[in-house]
Amino acid sequence: MSRTINFLKRNFKEVFRDPIIYIFCLGFPILMFLLFYVINNFSNSQTPTFETRSLLPGIITFSYSFVMLTMSLIVSKDKQTFFLKRLYSSPMKAHEYILGYAFVGLIVGFLQTIVCIFVSFLISVVDGVAFLTFGEILLLILSQIPIMITNIFLGLLFGSLFNDKSAPGITSVFISLSGILGGCWMPLETMGGFETICRCLPFYPSVYIGRVVTNATNAFGDVYVFNGVAWFGLLPIVIFMFVSILLSTVFFKKIMTSDK
Image (cartoon, rainbow, N blue to C red; front, top):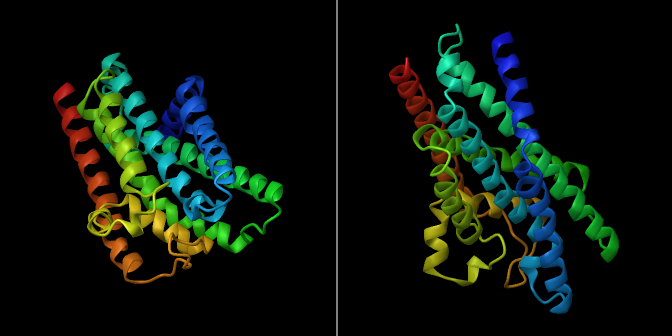
């Protein structure tokens, strides 16, 4: 366990030494919140998707895709600089490497969540509207953990498979997919068959369940409830989470073995 903690400390320093963590992982969610807040004000608050309670789960889910980018960069860079190859001669096991990376991703993800909730709180204060209760905040955080884990391990997977030049390009595709197919700022419930497709991916169900927790209102003026969409959405969320963990572990071990 001490080896994992030491590796975690090293990764923590590497990640938070990189400006990308502040620009994309922390700064970008704030910018997105402010942007949609301004757009909503100019549209006379006629866009339910841009309301604070609806936007908060969407921004949180979208921001986790930048954790994927961060994880893919640190793993691919360590691989390219032969840092990992030198470490392979140590007594550390594959799962200790993976946990050392993954825990850093969890720290970044929770920081993003706190930042998003805090910005959302400030906007609610400015607007003079009621904010979430403490219980709703806890439930929201818990509901978003599976998609956070999925993004972390997808980042580990792409970092293991690709170099530091290719990995960001691959993750940028998933960043776009997370925003578009997650319905983070689009009313997917009005798009018929397209919404049905999005239900089979982990992004939209995560946003949907988050909006159930926050009592957000959809494009039809109805409050999100835990209905069939939410129940069905649990399946792809769980599947993608376990598949991402499995694939990242298998490929990391395979690369570790071949490098040795």
